[in-house]
Amino acid sequence: MSLNTVKESDLHAYVDGALPEADREAITRFLAEHPDEAQRVRDYQMQKQAIADLFSATLDEPIPETLRSLASPPRASDAMDRPRERPSFLPRGSLQRIAASVLIAFLGGIAGWVAHGQYPPAERLSVAVPLPRQAAIAHAVYSPDVRRPVEVSGEQEEQLVTWLSKRIGTPVKPPKLGKLGYELVGGRLLPGNIGPVAQFMYQDGSGQRLTLFVSTENTANRETAFRFAREGTVNVFYWIDGKFGYALSGTLEKGELARLATAVYEQIEGIDRQPR
Amino acid sequence: MDSDAILAEIPRLRRYARALLGHRAAADDLVQDTLERAWSRIGQWRPGTDLRAWLFSIMHNLHVDQVRRSTPPTCPVDEANDDLQTRPTQTDGLELNDLESALRQLPDEQREVVLLVALEGMSYSDIATMLGIPSGTVMSRLARGRERLRQVMAGLAETPASRLRVVK
Image (cartoon, rainbow over all chains, first blue to last red; front, side):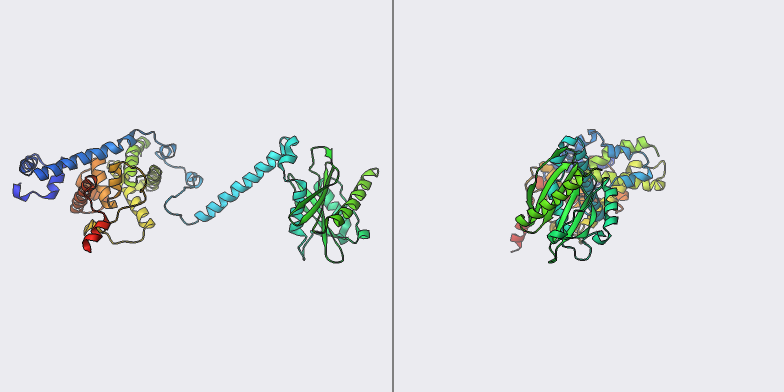
């Protein structure tokens, strides 16, 4: 190698110890006569060492279990079991997977909520959705429905009573409010806090609707007098009698609703007083 | 294939990925992808050949795929003129090691070669084979990368803005 033909690549090969001995000596002589190039080569050598030093600690880090397990042939199911989070891009279908995981988390939350409501029973009323709110939501959901407000129509009252009584596990019977201007539209089964509850719907001549929500989920074993609650535009009168919780909901004025609730209460208590 | 042999390569794969990507989590993701692909193509590995070089080339290809997917198509500027590249700004505001932030300012192709030489001590011809490029290209990328790194570290590198001022 002539000193006049030293190329840039020779200097790097010199830094990396990739030159034959003779060439190496030639470069050493060249650098002795060219201090600027010599400084540059020293910079490259230091830079190379600094890079090695900077990342050497990674070699001593414990290998994450995810990677360690991949030193062995992966089982076919592993790829399915291990959804990956990709920071830089979203692979096809990832939105569906995210949606699914949100749904799973949500359902898990509900399951936890319900399970928490069951154990211990003494705390249940405080953590479960309160009766008047359940009733008001059910009222708001179903009472505006023109075509299918109920599952079983009031014209088949006997079937309705048999079915709902069987499903909620105790005899229930819709009170008669005809004298007060409200006829039974029908009823439906709803999910309560821990199981099925029943809803009866009534309607007057103007289309005004009432719903009576009947729950058998009360385990606090207490009775309450009439109570009033307002959930949005829905007024609710409710009371608890043993394991039963009753709630009469409607958007009508409070005094009118109280009158109807009293009638319902009297009929139900009357039913209760009858020998079984 | 011997699982112990693969296990022994994981620290080096992690180190290179960490240096290449700059982020620990992204680096381990890349290593994981590399190992998964290696197993899915285990039939292509010929016993007796260099396992490390094979794994590194898989990692390189995955990295190129990921970069290509996550950025709009661009003209390669490496061989022509790397003045066009702009400084990455995603680490602005972070107090990074000077050298590490200087590495981030290299184009991917140059950083790869600089790191493979410095960390793995790979020969130029092995790198050329691994990256699928001519040896001369390896040399030019190494020379450009090292010189740019040196200038950045010395505070000599001009920013794109100052270049624009010169043009004016």
